[in-house]
Image (tube, rainbow, N blue to C red; front, top):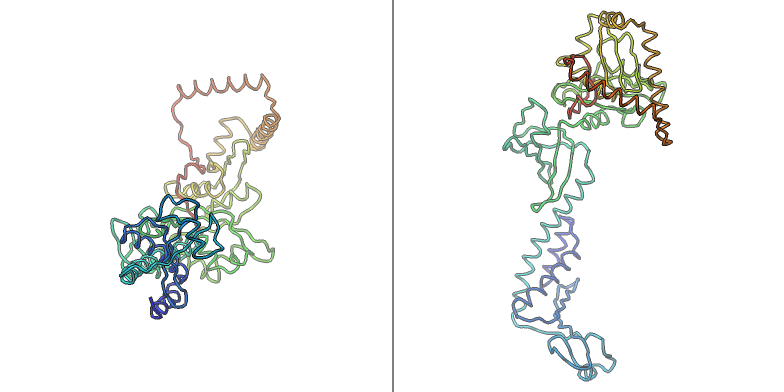
Length: 423
């Protein structure tokens, strides 16, 4: 080891970000193993490397004992005191040794250790950098496509965009650049594995934070997102400043802000709606772009009935039920939709008025709240239990004897795993 070696380690430290001390420690450990392997000894060997010059010193560590049982591992107190009178039983005597050809062994070992340590350290650096960036946006270049998986060059390392995380019908060609979300960073035997996504709802959220200053600054906040990647997204926003219109801030002048996000998502449609604390208003907004005349809320069942104009029924439901499905996922409520004509027929069939329907649902919510309080207090009446058993029995009988009735009803569960948002 010499000055050139120390200079090389200094360059590695600057370029790779790997501390020289880490390499020195690894070398010392590797040289101990090399010595034992090449010289067939079981001695306690200590290797010390000078951090300034690179010089190596080799010591055989021996315990100082009263009676020597293993000469390779122990030395008597009498012999130790001949070397240094201050030695006591229990101390360790380090005897320097000078094996032949150890310089050549050290050089070979040093090369192998440095190369391996560089690889290991680079992997750790990459892992530490990207694991802290999970759920952040990153721009990458498509390197290759294999078995429907897209391999993306991030500059310092390669990441993978699995088929399940790709946008439907989006084509990935070599050299194309995309904004993606770092979904997960995992350690593997071949180094860190970085999983990217283009279909996750958080990608839309990060794009809004990137493109819209009011969202970045926290003036406009995103309440919830529902998305069917490649098709449509709904996003609910609200403003913490009364003077800032959340819808206008997100859309931008002539739609410039939201259009930039739409283009990045391969022209995926985006519906931006205003979040309201009043759940009826929020559900009404969530069914945009259709108009909603009335919304009846049943808090007991976490469901709602939305009434829309006859000519807007198909728009409210959306193609293959997409609009109402996304609205249900956005609000977290089950949503039934009826046209005005269907609603009138429903009232006539049940011989009930709008006011009576609203009151009935309100009462059921109050009863549910009362039961919940009783359950929290450990109070369950015999009559309640009997009624529940009677209702369960009636329901089972009706299920067996009645045909399945089709309804225009969607809730969060029907959305399956399709996380999407629309503007």
